Amino acid sequence: MFLIPGFLISFVTFPGVMMHELGHQLACWLSKVCVFRVQYFKFDAKVAGFVEHERTDNPWKSLLITYGPFIFNTILGTILVLPLSLMWAANANRVILPIWVRPVCYIIAYFGVSCLANAFPSWKDAQNLFESVVKNKALPLLPRILVAPFVIIIGLCSAAKFFWFDFIFAFGVPELIYAIITHNPPHFWTMW
Amino acid sequence: MDGFQFEYDPGLCRHCHKRYIDRSSGNPNEFLCRECRAELTKLRIPKWLLLCMAVVITAAIVMSVYLGKIVMNNSTGRAALSEGEKVLAEVDALIAEHKNYSAMDVLYEYLEANPNNTEAAMAGIEKAMEIGQYDYAASIYNTCLSPKGYTDDEIKEIDKIYAELNRYYGTFDKVGEALSEYVSEVGTDMSDERKEALRKECYNKVLALKDDEGCEKNIIYYCVGTYLTGNLDESERYLKMAYNYAPLTDEIAGRLAVNERRKGFMSAAWEWVDKGEKVNAEGIEVRRAKATILLAEGKYEEALSVMEELYAFSPDGSYVRDTYCIALYATGHIDKMKTVMSEAKEAGYEFDEEFHKVISNRMSIYDYYVEGDE
Image (cartoon, rainbow over all chains, first blue to last red; front, side):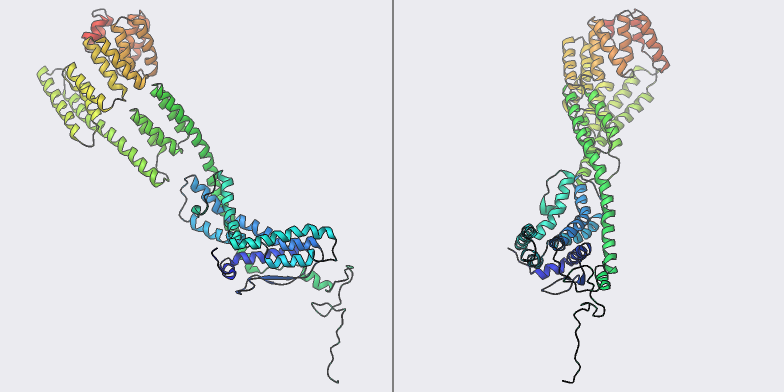
């Protein structure tokens, strides 16, 4: 597997990292959980960004805060890659587009792909969710059991990042939109 | 120890260390005062980040709307394209039934309503040119392939079509120019020798065009064979040469049928009619040739039936009025014949001398079609 240091990917996709942290922040705001400090992005090999918030005993709030970036980045990323998918659809229909359309679409898509590539909660997020909910014996058993699969999902996704799962997802979303619009199968990297 | 000793008050807010923790919520783990909690649960996003997001999201929405409209319009175009494919299949079926004009009408009607369907237009033009319907091809070219965005492949295809149309009409222009000169010089009071000399001059001039690479040989031979030869055998020779170049042109077969009829070789004439009908059963020249053969053979009712259809389809076709009137005359529809003749007169059409001989019973129909000039 072709390995690129994670921090390098974070640097390249820094808008997505910022939106990831914003996703946590928005989830805290929706859950009325206090946020003490937000670092949207920093050039650091260990931690590219973080949100310091108060600990909550509510398992659903913890789940929302953990999955906030996934929801927010996926919605935002989808909006941002939509022009690219539409451009592909236009090309598939042999429409000649003005010359400026392609670079503009790719610039916007860069932000979209960055968001989508950073949509998945981090391993650290999974650890936090595990500690605050699944391992928290003070909580009733049912929410702990229900939240456990979500921790496993994050764990699996984190493991799959080794196989570039985050980028497969990021590049796959615009292709999926293209396939839905045109009813044509996507032709993967050749479209880019 | 006399030094300063900090008195830590566990009841103070852990954030501001000034106010007391708000215990009103009933949460035993509460560690913030009311003000700090209110402040820290507010959404505080830096303005620069909001601005950047607003710019990118706005750009994405504007581009999505712009491209969405294009894709939507084009999907309508794609639907039209599949509709176009159906029309092209219908055109193929009509051509297979030798109904070339009906095929072209179906195609033209569709393309007039859907001029943006470039693929159907190009396929239609190619079909039209294949069956020798250059006027339809040119008309579709002008209607549908007017300057607009094309791919490189489409441009190459359009250039090919343009070159072929240009070659076709270029040849007609050159031949037409020579023929007009000839017609304008020939006078009624001119001696036969002088007329023959002018004809020969025009004949050589038109025939010389066959060496011009930019000219279509079948058109040259067709025009020479139809208008400029001195006798039927020579005419037949050139028309056959034209036919060999363009066997899918029903007009040539029609002309050859007429030549055979004039020589009295009815079975040979019918052979050419069959060949012509296999190319285009709706061809004007072929249908008229068929009617004249039927008239020469004395099958007047059949001839009238053919001519009624043809007159309704193309009254201005070459000799169509004459043949129709003869068929009306032969079947005893004199009043109807007179009506058609007066309509023709109003349209500025003049019947030739031999025609008048036939309808005044001074010449037989057989002689008119076999021995005569028609």
